[in-house]
Image (cartoon, rainbow, N blue to C red; front, side, top):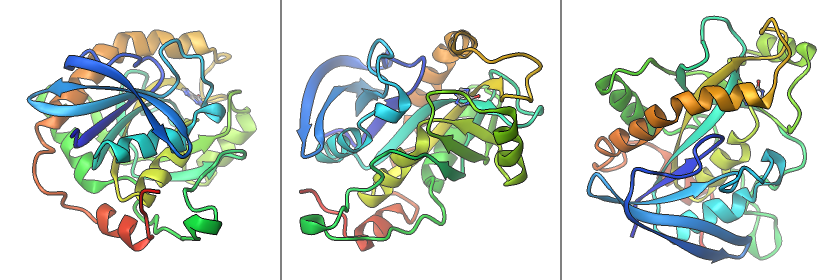
Length: 264
Ligand code: HPA
């Protein structure tokens, strides 16, 4: 059973770090999820590409619940997810990595919980520290070991997308304490917490956000930076596995259980 799940965001469509990878479709009460299962660093891992192999799924239409439930059903306890982000500040440059430790949720239309009442009941999950400290510390150690410029901590502002932000929105996010802006980490991180799964995010800075950058933003710019970063990101995920073999030294599993999380 894979203990570790990897979720590849923009630019990371294949794991290329797994041996003997096999694709399977995992059915969940929320829909099907395509998962590749294989070995990396002697560890069994499960990989999901969030936007589909051809980036055909926009952020607001990703079936986050099916993806996270599929990983849970397969036995995953820890997730490393990647996300392309814009930086709200000039001191975080394209090509740098930030491990988000907080988020601000500006999404609008997504299914954000497994607990919709009825048979599932209602639950209010603690989200004081949304991103797992154990996973973050593993990724940080791995990043330093392989010489990447990596910053542990930053507030991820999650927007609905798929459009980029206005300069005024970015200005507001800055005033609210945001550091990074992206379109996918919420509700992924919340759903993982509801099921007691540890979740860490590798944010890859692909651009300065709207109004911070001196030019108009394009998706091509994001893809170009991701192309240059993807080998390093895959290497970082693979190296991180070495630091995730011990017991989970964090609160995620107990919070998920208190929230009443269960497989349906
Ligand atoms: N805004 C939102 N999402 C993003 C950005 C951005 O500037 N860059 C990469 N993903």
